[in-house]
Image 1: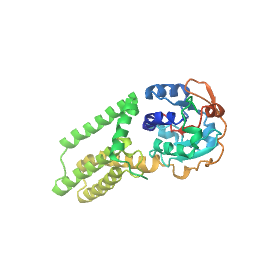
Image 2: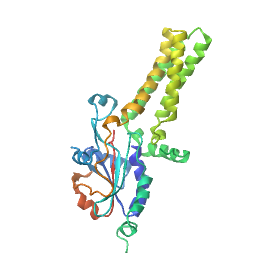
Image 3: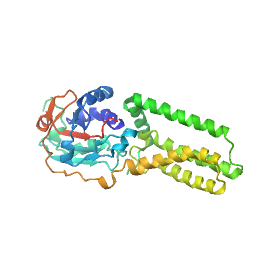
Image 4: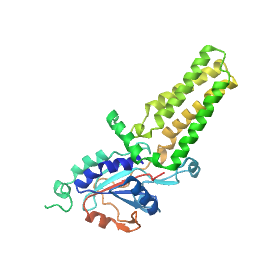
Length: 128
Length: 184
């Protein structure tokens, strides 16, 4: 899970910028708990086991069941990143074209600059 | 697609070792299984007589090496994590197929099939992964949401099975939502 490991490498920078990071997949919460512990992740994981949010976003990928023999699950999320401002408006998004070509955390870091500095560049809890 | 610097690629390898799938028992079993197959193949091709024609002999070894080159380009997936067209897989696959066809036309024997069977299989498998399995193809869909749209509300359980809503997330500040394919 290099993509999430890489996200963890940059987590400090997101945290410092006051951005809350969530990783979302179809994995069950108990699987996410194991993965979070394994990665020693600072960010939180969300489980969309039924794929409802993925369907709403149209990033729900369904695969041929026979691929299970090579470890590919029947359902997955298309690797995508959304940066939301405090009002819940999408300010930046990035979509993968293939499973292999994953979004890079540094792109999201650059995108943070799109959000007004007064909204984000102050660590949460620090004096205004 | 931007090519990553060697420094970044080496960093990716470090991340893969520290956080990646290599820590999972399933992958250890897969690696040991693959090594067993390759070692068996090596023993078989060493014991079996090679093609009599020296040129076919040399080129068939070269074709076999190219087949394994695709594996080399694919095994550390991190090296091609952001490369849309991984060069080692593409070059290795083309050369393996071309040289194999040449050798089979020149001197078709069972020993040659034994020598080239596994490399051709590896090259085909890697090509399948790169160009069919991992590409979204016709199923590729554009995210319904665009920049400026409001993210739909939801309530999903976190890793401790506590329900989390979008409103609760946004109360903490701007949010980066990373959708990933799952922990396979």
